[in-house]
Length: 143
Image (cartoon, rainbow, N blue to C red):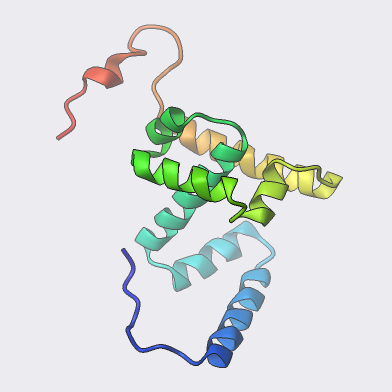
């Protein structure tokens, strides 16, 4: 869990910092530069946490069950339940619009590109769908 200082910033200072962060996030145009930027700003743990959160939201928007999300992303049942409830309460309007709602052609392509990349990453850790060994993961020792 990230550590947050007990000392509160003034609201205007926080808003200014947030605006600067957003502008910096928009600057890298290539994936390599964006990856370097995130590597400079976020720890590996924070990067993984954000990626998992985003993946849970996207998979919920795409209609995946909580079980499939937990199995693919190795998150707890409470995490999927919490994000599902938040999604139902409209806490992620931009992501919901991007992955559920009607979209322009550009947004459709961005959403599909993101989904394709996420799908490939998720499937790398999943057992095969058919053939020998497809249920082997159920009996693996989880030390």
